[in-house]
Amino acid sequence: MSSTRDKSALFISDIHLSPQAPATAERFCAFLAGPASAADSLTILGDLFDYWAGDDDLADPFNTRIVAALREFSARGVALLFMAGNRDFLVGDAFAAAAGLSLLPDPVVRDIGGVPTLLTHGDLLCTDDTDYQRFRAQVREPSWRTTFLARPLVERKHEIEALRARSETEKRIKAASIMDVNATAVVAALTSHGAQAMIHGHTHRQGRHAHLVGGMHCQRWVLGDWHADRGTALACAPAGWHFID
Image 1: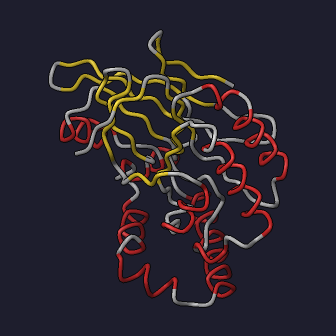
Image 2: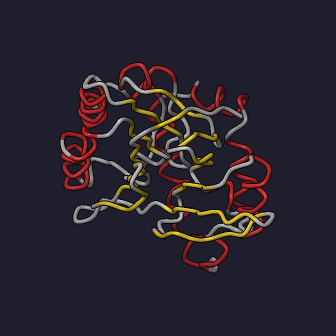
Image 3: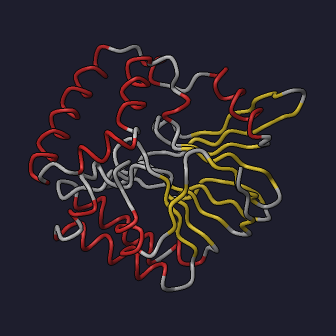
């Protein structure tokens, strides 16, 4: 378990950037140039991109623009950290170097304003969706990653599009509760990591939840997803934690 201290920290997730959503990209770049520039750190908890086929796609014009915006942002002296989500788990060291950010494992504990806080994308907590958890375990295997990234980029993109289409079909027939976090999994994660708070995304169900863990009152903050007309962040400052637009 690793731990570091942040004084004024911002957290976002599920921006789902893609060329097909230019207004969302504009909102994100404006966020980097505006509110985020006043923070000590910005942590992206996964799904920055709608999908990432591999770091050899850095030359794509849209990706180049986003990476340049991230690098310009980090060059201002704000610590920029990234944790992979279920859409962009193929992000690697080349992307991190180009964007000027540090990669975080999932999960990880950080000291946020004196509070040991568990950071995770959130999909690990959706344990009721057993089919997804099997798929997640498969694609996170280093051998699977190596084999997949060895395939031509165009072929990888076609495969990802097919997987996304299948996922959208499955979502329509799954119960909404299955795709949310499991309360027992949340308590188990907080307990095993000795955390007093948790921040995650993935479910797109922005909010704050209270959990009683071994007699200790813990808070779980869920980050919202971004759209052309909406993009929120969790601001953690000495005066308190709250969502900002």
